[in-house]
Amino acid sequence: MIVCVPTIGNNGLNEQVGEHFGRVPTFTVVDIETNEVKVIPNVSHHMGGRGYPPELIANAGAHVMLCSGLGRRAITMFEESGIEVYIGAHGTVENAIQMWKNNMLQMATDKNACERHTYRGERTGIL
Image (tube, rainbow, N blue to C red; front, side, top):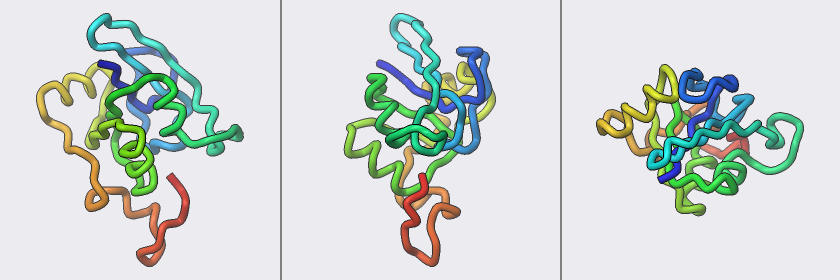
């Protein structure tokens, strides 16, 4: 099982969870069966590149995304890729994974998406 966490740097399991999912500089990808850790740069259009963060994460082979929070459009993109998303993660990557394993995170839905990514009930296109 491969888990991905939006992060603010390159310190692997010891890195802090980034609070703004789409604009973090890195994503830390962890195979929880082999303990292999990879850090991939956020090269999405949010950071001057191409594509969206859910596409990068799907291409990294992730099955699960653990984050602080995210918008409706990102949730939909993850659902379309078959990636489960959980919100409420904080602290380090290692802490976020432990929270998930202990059922302390909430599955992301349209109802608990970050509201700052909508305007008067309409989607803004921002992740």
